[in-house]
Length: 293
Figure 1 (cartoon, rainbow, N blue to C red):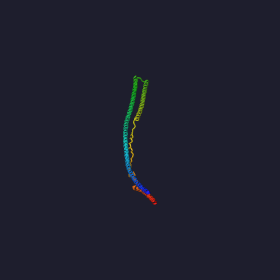
Figure 2: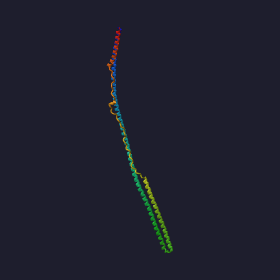
Figure 3: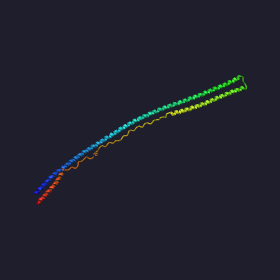
Figure 4: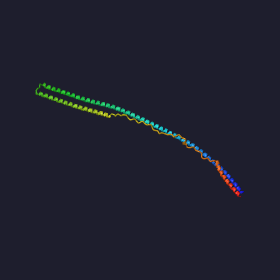
């Protein structure tokens, strides 16, 4: 009787254990499926957030590039404005310098021409004065020669008036003529010397005129010509900026998928299969023991 009781107790124990194990396997499968669902929900939410993050990063990159391009454009515009102001200032200086040079050149040319006129006037005045002086010397010499001639005639007339004749008169006449000739010769030499001095003075006046003209020409300002213009500034170069490409589906990657689900019925069935096999073994053993008796 005791073996029967023990066999029944063993079968009951296996049935109770199998029921608990089946229930535990079912709960474990359900929890595993819940975890799989939560993981899929988390992965899907993370995937959506990554998509938003990628789109936000692209928008920020576009804003950053646009801001850099705008700032570089402002800097280039400011640099162009500074270059234009500097060019305008340099151009004004150049034009003012060109105008000043041309005014100075015209003034120098006027002074040069007036200096030449003054030099020519001074040379002409000096030449006229020297020629007048020579003419006065010649006139004085002619007057002196005429006076000497008159004096010789007066002397000869006085001698003849005294009634003198013969060789003494001839000698006196010859002496007077000789004296007159010497005085005329001296006057001619004086005129010749005066002419030589006048020619020398006139030559010196001409040399002084040439030297004065050369000095005036040396002091004359050279033609300033045309000053070079300042170089026109070139536009400040700017960089080319490329915006990020439009986001495509492949940029986000594949959407997350759920993992493998566990079947609660299959898990319970596996436990019950093992339990039933164990119960069958127990029943077989119990039946064998009972048959031997």
